[in-house]
Length: 479
Picture 1 (cartoon, rainbow, N blue to C red):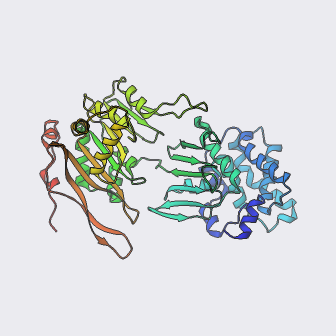
Picture 2 (tube, rainbow, N blue to C red):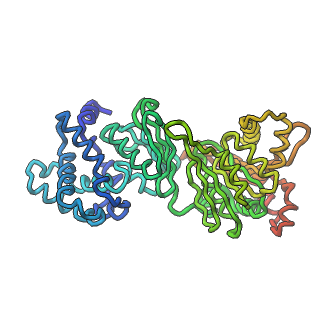
Picture 3 (tube, helix red, strand yellow):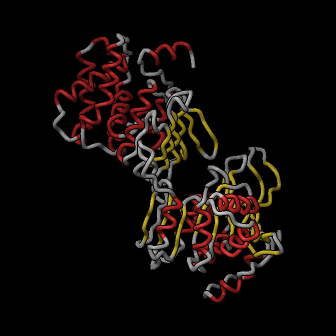
């Protein structure tokens, strides 16, 4: 960031943006108004904007012409249109900007009117400077590292954008718009929070003094229309034969774990697997922040709750798992297992709740087994390691390992059967695996997903459930 940028940001200026920045949010004001979701209370929408303007004025900071136009629009709307619904005001903003520029010679030829109007609409109805990024369907993640650095993930690769906020307060205003509607708060006593947007996108926020570069926002976007198994096949995440096999496993009520690293696509795969559950079964989902989008009608979604300002009232994933067992579930779907709830989940799987699905962080199927052992110990109950392994071997039928490769692609690298115990060791057997052959000229990982030639031990269980899978699914095609 240049010295001029820092001085202007400190003075309350709108940070300079390049043509690329304008293109990132380039849309006619009417189009921005159509895409953005309007807020009902105009005075509330302007509350933070007016607060920032008053602060800038108190410090006698000179405003840029761009910001001056926006401030005049704020004032005129509050004076003339404050009693009208926001959806009626949005189409009038552009005409108001034209009139202001005609009356003020100092603004003529020195401001981008369409850009100013568009930014104002995003401030009122969306999430400010990052709103165009959230509307861009090619972007899968938005990362705000303080007010002057915003990264996005596009096609599996990280890119630095030209989008910037005015200052830390501007970022905090957007954070407040995100967390307030769902009853969460962010302040010095609670500087971290997990939240979600109305479309289900996951949001993590951390603010100073924990975040040294300023307020940080990480938004993991989710598709408006949930991905289907055909989408994952098209992305190269898995093959058609693997999809047939996984659908059969879900319908045959096998207990399945989806494991992988952060950002590997575990939740997307879990959502697709959940779509195979028959619509006449009662499903209970348990998550830290509700993300799963199930199409079935009989779904009960549970969400954990953080402690209040006094440090009380927390409801953990483990509490919800225990409670779900009293809700007559036919399927339990856990967004992520990361602690003592692993013991309650394994006990549920071993006591009649077949067909459960869950995700967990690990680097390999074997590592997932080791992490499950550790998480069971976190429950605070001292059990012999062999007893824990017997619980795991008896409960988990299948582990799906998903990875984000170096080229940004996401693939299911292993589908592994948990075959049982031999002595003190849990026996695992790959059914499908990813075979890497190299890297092409564009830097993309070359390889293919292939069956290992081993038919799973639970194959007969699939047959007795009335599900027939051709033997060719487990044999690699020659050539």
